[in-house]
Each structure stands twice: as C-alpha cells, then as structure tokens.
Image (cartoon, rainbow, N blue to C red):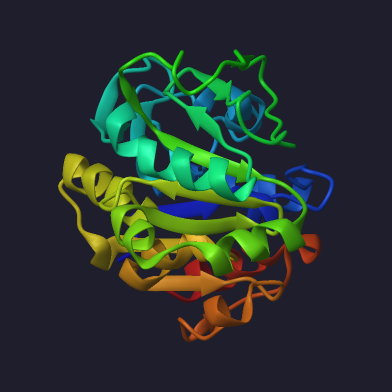
Length: 266
C-alpha cells in the first residue's frame, strides 16, 4: 500500500510557467485527505518553494520536504532537521580548481544562502523566496558544511563541462543534471532517494510504500527506489527507460492523471 507520494517540482509537478495547476492541486489535496503523505522533493531550499507548500496545504506538524536534492530533510513548520549531509570547503577545492582552469561558473549553497564565486566566470543561477546571494571568492568562503554546488549556464556550456569533467571528480561528487541549464554537485552519498529513505524510516515505512514522480537525472535514485516510480511524458529518455510506470506531461496534469487512476484502482 502506497503511503507516501514524492514529487519533483520543475517539469514534473510544475507547469512550464512554474505553477501547480488546479487539477494537480485538487488531486494531491485529495490524497492528503485520505492519509497519504505528499512530499515535495527539490534541489531548492524550503523558503524558495514555500508558496507551493502553502498551496498544497502541507503545513501540518508532520509534513516534511526533501530539499537540496536530498541533502536536507526538514519539517515544514518547525524547520526541525530530520536528516542532513553535505560537503566541506576542503572537499570543494578540487571542483573550484577545475572550474577556474576551465572557465566554468560555480555557486556554492549552504543550507540558508548562496555564495556565487566571483573568481570564476559569471553564473546565471537564480532562486526565488528572498534567498540571500553573497558573492565572494573561494578563499573568502567560510569553512563550513555546504549542501551542494551549482553550475548554471547555457546548456551547451554545461555539456562542455560534463564532457571535460575528469573521472576523479565524477567519483568525488554525486553529479546530476537537474535542468538543461543547471548541473549540480553533491556529496557522493546525497540523493533524493537517501533523503526519502530517512523520511520513510521516520514514519516506520520503507520504499515498498513509496510512489515517486520525476523527469530528470537528479530523480533517478528515487524513481529506482520507489515501489511505483513514475516518469513524466516529457522526461529525459534515460528516465523514461527506468520504470514501467509513465504518465502525461507536466503541462497535461500528468501527476493528477496518474494518482487519480492508481488510487481509484488500489
């Protein structure tokens, strides 16, 4: 029996203009009313998606969000941290040196704000929710734990970055393309599936009770782990191939179509 539904945001739950449609909102609120947990899974911090959390009514004491692609599992209302992992400044230095040598951008995110690296080429990274951006050089970066690094630029530049990335860096970080213009670097053990595993354990459940929706490379882990992993019609081809479950696109209320049919039949 599915007890938790995990949802990627961009190009999955959200329309192309970054909205949750009324159809998807109604379907997900109906699940919540039945006692099924609805959990948003995103690369963003919670403040940047708070309007979506409020729209779906995910503001009860036992509502959580998977943020930073699994690096932080946080309670929506109390902001209590359930699980957290990250990367130290020392562990980021090889990536910074590579980016500097090859003229790639780099934004470093802790669990509260963004540090654009001013000693590298300019980034195009943006976040809503009044998230603070504090530009600085890598040498000025505080020595603390960070959630992830984002390289944000034109897709063709990130294609070049991916092709140039040496094997040792691919092994040192979990590298995932969350959008065509965003490449993310996390600790090697960080993944949406890891965050969801911690949350499921908190409720006394496991992946046999998990349904997950996604479209992109950073959704791979949770789609493979879930009993019901659902790929959107607009998903990347390698994501579509991961699972036997598929639905309509993010523009056609694919989330609502699938959950309405599945929970009516089970």
